[in-house]
Image (cartoon, rainbow over all chains, first blue to last red; front, side):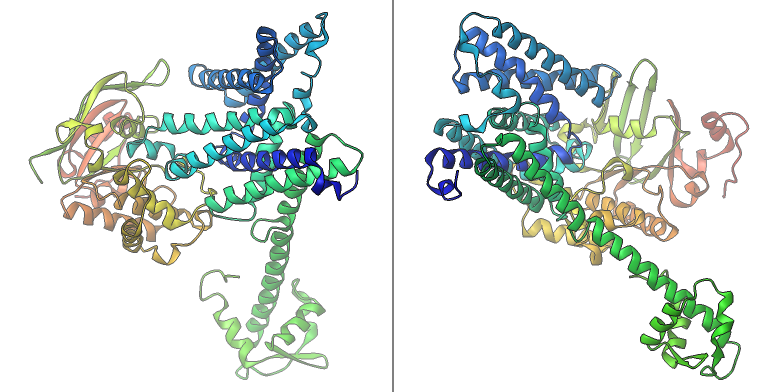
Length: 370
Length: 245
């Protein structure tokens, strides 16, 4: 397939639009999941949706994706409620509850699928696509559903923005202000489940949680504002969808779901390394710079200690007397001279007026800020 | 000190699992006091506040604020939770957190506007944090975070303030700044109820005190009841502190 087909091919355009919208809604709602510290909830829910798909087919015999997704939605919601029930009614921790529900529901879903495979008619073929997703099977009506769901969740998010933010930051405080926290909590969970369910056909049960988490985790690195984070996550998710589809279509029809997830992972890696505020690279650079600066100031202060005892501050001293001081290197001397704090003449150094004053004020204020 | 009762707790019992955390608490707090709740770890001090505020459901008992149930009097009450109860890496600014104090009066869906922003800025100024309004909250020190929480409660313009260990992990400067604000609130006729750990400062900071250790031990003016007898009953035998008269 040529790249030009990408713009002209009708099927491909439908799929691209679908994955873009899916990426956007997942990024948006994934931000809430990440900030609620419920990153793994998505994984549990998507696995919990599988038996719903299998049972929906078993009972209706229909392979219409809307029917199957309705089944997925119901069993996903049941899984969510059960997880919450386990956490509140028993001593088990959230991670245990998530693990239990995930494997229990997934196992049951596989069981029903394997039963369906044994049936004589071949009608069940294709249900497997919900495991790893098959974006190629997206048709216009599927994309329409995605657009509608995304529109609704966007509207709800904007409407309850203030309440969502309050709940995510401080749930107890929200309840003292008179907000029904169970309702807000449930609303957020419901839309996360909804986003997962509409993504199953494209990305599949197994990889769905990455669609939720990756764009949100990447977005968090670039901003300290909730609104910006949600927006960025939606944009990252959208581009993951578009690029992923393009790449998989260009290279001999690689499976789309995994490629989308990998593209999202690239966003994460780039964000973790290169984001200016929280990225590893700039953090490391700042750390090294601060250490150098501190080393320099330490040496200057040591020199100040020597000079202080003499009346004439510009009196030269031998470089060799600095040897007893561990922070000293030729490099630091040069750096000090560059800052115009000292002068070097031959084997001697002397403090400048500026250097003397700097050293004098070094520890007067609190720890130097930089 | 007013004659009116600001907070009345009646037969309150709370249990998380099997063991009661609070047992049959009867307590009335008069209007206009600055009161410390003291007691050892696990005495149920935070739980008492949370139960009064309806964050925790009690097994038995009732609470009234100025004679009416709490859910009818929310606008009269403000809450400062423990600093450690939230994630300070949350993507938001100091001003934004203080603005949350206005959400209760706004109610569902309505967005905060210029009026709410002005109130929040005033509260920030009061706690000496105006210069930090745009700062990401994770980049504030522990004391500054505590002041932000206090400002958020001040924005609520309540009559009664509940604070859960506002002096925990803050430096001397912040502690003095906070206590001055609390004393100002009392002067304005507000009732302030503080879970407090440092027994040494009780006589200096507070005029009213409640001793609590699962059961209610005593409540009254500091000068009358803050003595070895009550401290021993609360903390166990032979507990001595220097009580400044």
